[in-house]
Length: 111
Length: 119
Image 1: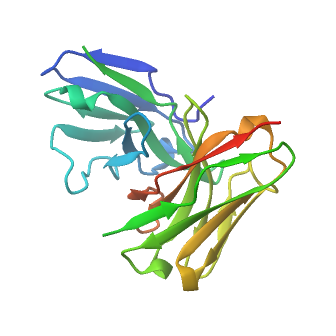
Image 2: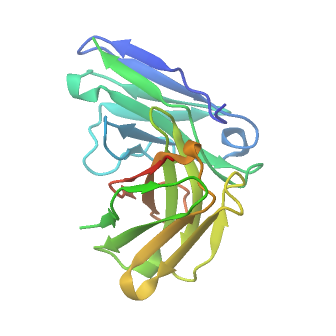
Image 3: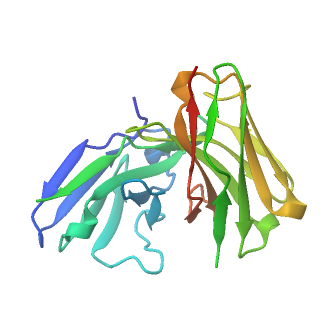
């Protein structure tokens, strides 16, 4: 059971927009801790996609955007491309566990 | 450019220990915190602990407390993660990752090290 809850899978056609939700609690997102997002392609290390709710590292396309409100956060991907097919993880800090926590991951399928 | 290069795959017997290394380059080693994260086959990412490279302070996940040791060698710009009392459930890919500024997130990752625990 993950501390941060994500849908197991989402899908969309090329060019469409999809969103991935991440639901936490009062000890992590609700406590004001930042949320971050990673993209993991099969067989590779995760790659930082969004940090501190909505910031993109250099090189990440602006098709990717993030937001946070209360105990929830979301990642939006517009103009879906085949190369976006990957697993996506949200991540934060939890004060009850005194450590870093990840969501269960969401598999994005581009139809 | 920043690089984190990890040691190679390991096969271990249950009950033994494994030590994985992560060599950093391309930045001032002692300025950052390094974390260890693992991922069992087909499973989610799981945080294990961190070390502040500058002073060696460590913090571990409650799940691994007592079984994991993270250390660093500043002269080699290398961080180590040792996991003891291995069991089959520890079969995972182990990643090191850099925290860019105490923000509890990871901007660079190692390539991962597969540790297989099997009798």
